[in-house]
Length: 296
Image 1 (cartoon, rainbow, N blue to C red):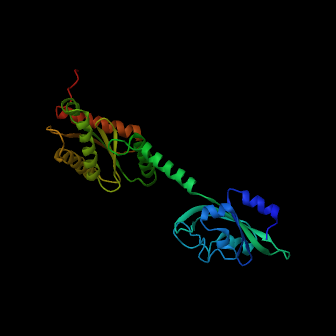
Image 2: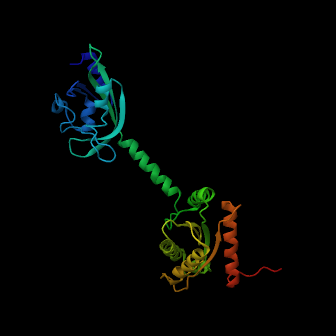
Image 3: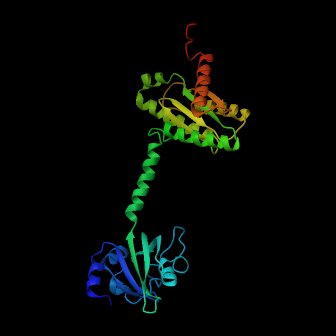
């Protein structure tokens, strides 16, 4: 039994606390432990925590009680141990917790038991999940759900690092819808937005595994490829043009795509590669008569 003063302190703590003897039988269970686990003090008194009670598991679902249990470790080596784990709630579901186990010294210097403190980690995990979602949303185009310019910058950093380290060639394809302003002018922006969504989906399904498609705004799309050859790059550009032209749209207008591609080369950086792809895109539009030639 705990002294009344110590029990009162532990009862008031917002963290779950329980005490076990050297056989891991529970001798104290505070109110916060009841709240977090759903087990009441009289349910657990005298029972070992690995006998149908908490039975902590790790991220893979592996039981900790028989190998990596902080409580077992504290009783074995007399040191404090911590872990992030999931405990079984009385109602059956798992609760993420952070836990620490510290030995209680006996008269012979060996652990006579241990005290375990744990906190419900659900709120922390929820924040982590929200941060992951926020990070993803910050790098996505809200209309097409493709990567945006921030995601493109990240992709280029990865590709250039791979190029510098392993010399695996990659390419960028700058893509632009032809005369897209006429779609909005003739059919309205809602129809124009649907056209952009369809184009985005078609482009995503036209590239290879490992290639990435981005929307930079308006009717501008960009593809950053994985390793490929010049011939494969040419075939990819043709395929992008084909899938956009062959898709079905909610407008009675022909939707076409112009593409300018650039393979990485020594001395390039992301800005240089993008400029070269954009220059070839503009040349492609001019050669098709889609961009008026500037006077000499």
